[in-house]
Image (cartoon, rainbow, N blue to C red; front, side):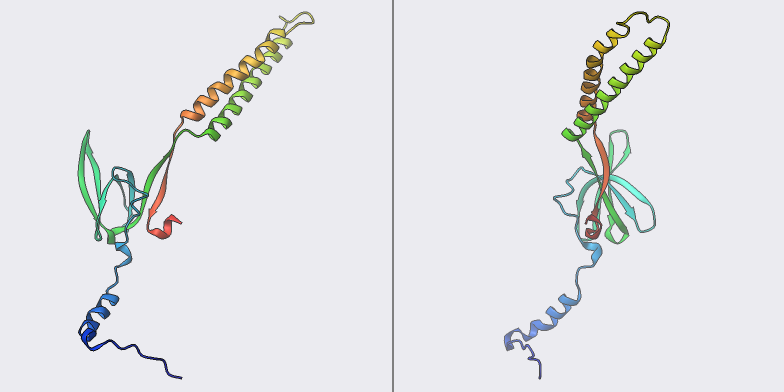
Length: 178
């Protein structure tokens, strides 16, 4: 069985060499673009170069041949810098997580537990000392227990809500982002 051969109409045959050259001259892998939805201009990026060095700066733009960064050159000074895609091994963007309800809950529970443990420890130290006499020894600590746990919880919730967590996430090459 023979395979059918695709033939171009006579008027398009002069374009065939151009189409073949265009297909053979595919865009090199290094010219792939960073997804603009993941990195906005001004975002902090870390670029790992093929020679093993690493550079950080603010993402400015990109072209098919270069990655453009703004790098610090002193206090309040930014210098435009371009890095050829062929020299880039990896690009990471700095991501910051803010205002996490789950983190606030975990820190609040930890704060309440710390307040409770500290109050119970102080109560035990007081009861074992010679200053304790009578059946109501340590009653003030028992009454202070909810206050200490509540204060610890409020401090923990505040800390968990206001804390920012930053980390570097890969954004290029596309295989590193999956």
